[in-house]
Length: 134
Image (tube, rainbow, N blue to C red; front, top):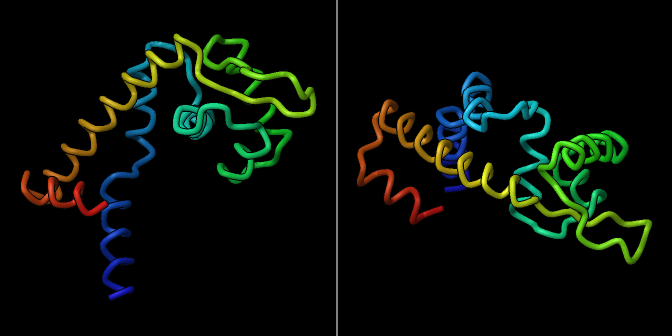
């Protein structure tokens, strides 16, 4: 059973995760969001108020690297710092602009995933069942 779950997840990842598609996805924003910023943006969108330290842990990069990435996102108007009561901890959220872009990214990604699953032989019923299972 465990092996079946692993194999199924691996198959889905191979269908969904493709570097070329990531670049296409980023082009839909109409901004110059660099590929390295995408996992950071996704985590901030999913976990409003996340700290830079928590973010670094989740994306698997050094704190200093993520902090510089966040600085660029703040400067570009994608991300805002939400709570500076403790100056040692930077809490983050998407700006209004970042939220609008996030909605576009999600919709585009959803369409890409549906197209890829269909191309890989998953019927609409299979896709609904997959979504319900996950």
